[in-house]
Image 1 (cartoon, protein in one colour):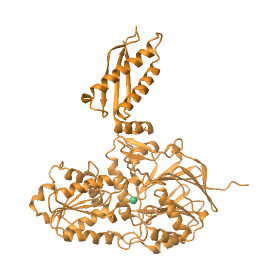
Image 2 (cartoon, helix red, strand yellow):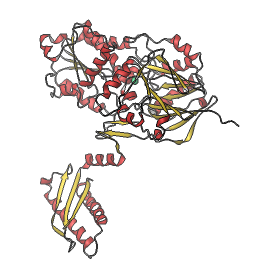
Image 3 (cartoon, protein in one colour):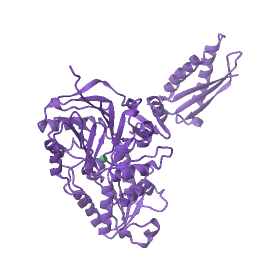
Image 4 (tube, helix red, strand yellow):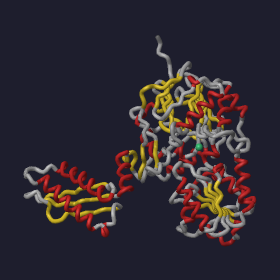
Length: 559
Ligand SMILES: [Zn+2]
């Protein structure tokens, strides 16, 4: 019997989490990559800059990679490029992105020298390309960043529809509303598999239109008599546009603060995705020329990011801007679960300085930009796919999306809830998950290191953060095997040494006893054993005395 042809789909990130989106489509060994995103670390990952997809599956298959297509310019779809691209890049690797997405990617690459110079082909609504067995048509999807493209992909098995992140918006910013007729025309070409954004799948109803968000923002502008300080994400181009438009309407001048915000405003303006009237933007020196009621400061830091502009302003570390009574601070909410406390502290600090705080969840990057239940159902009803693979979201969001699909009439067996690293087989008749998985665990980026910080290093960091460290330096006489003098103790984050003289004295005694006992009978000293003994016994001793467990580092010097 002829072996049945199949398409293989491998999500390397983004399924079972929010962020780090990256997916492989493979047909007869030819591989197409969709998005290369990162995610930000959780609170329990001290020192980690970001987390990127694990691409070990691609090792040895580099020459089979046909190309990469990007859906939009959010970092959870493009952010991992600088860490991954030189592992898969070769001259002639075809990369496609919309004009704005391309601009954001190339600008960011400038921060990473020693990288291959990327050539990115521009695509737009209606563009068609062919990469090996894949024919891709790009179509416009509304989101909260302009120039977002969904993908209609013809494969030898059947047609796939990848929604990108999306929402249906009757009144978007600077863009035409969702074109349902066009979506229907795409659907008429028969969709075998729908891959659809699940980020909003647990939220009832319909997402907010950008126009509704605009109205809410306008209320704040109407009521504010002092300066408006609006913090948002530098990638939320739509929100930035709204703040600028409102400032112009209410005759306010705008100051942009924060490096990434300045960069993104510049890129979006140059590419005409951001409309700013001449004279609207001013620099910090010009602030003094205008009354407070005519000033808007647009800055980064809505999430309480330590180094962002808003944080520097509230903590009085900013060079020229200070909060004052009468200011209105708009926070465009938090994204990362676990950052709530940081944002709370930020809010308190703003209020303490006499400013007002407006905090709208609906302006949140996730709440505001993604289709909710009603829209997801509508997308399924329009596309009428044979199969559904929920993508982009925590596991509970994927499951919720699967339920929506069942309500829309899709049989349970035709819906696959898959997670990162699973291998999904698609034929014309069937969708299934293989038992075997590919590596998809976190690859953590810390400074210049990619993937070198693993679970062990993180565990140490957490222990150091919890109970500190305790270093014991003992000099041992080679001849007698006895400790010479008194062992030295260095400690950080464990106890205040000056006030713990008794504890230190007792610890030194213990160390001497342990060493002398272990080396006393003469013969060769087993250093590994001795270090373990010190670590265990001193660990127990310190725990008994303090109920703390610092990391203990024995250093033994033989003289
Ligand atoms: Zn997005």
